[in-house]
Length: 86
Image (cartoon, rainbow, N blue to C red):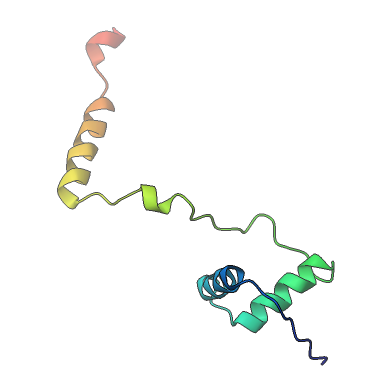
């Protein structure tokens, strides 16, 4: 295996690389190898297995009480009024 040293990486880019590697549960070296292989065409990127998390911060979680209240309203809407169908 050949060793290559990359100089002059912007600190912001280096931090993003570290975060991406941690998110993908890879070492920084493995992440860079994968990116290089994809870029030069030695490895194809999986197009339909990407996980998106860019909107996660906008959403929260319902408490059990909130869930129950919403579910009850949904269940009420799903009942059939037989008088309307005669």
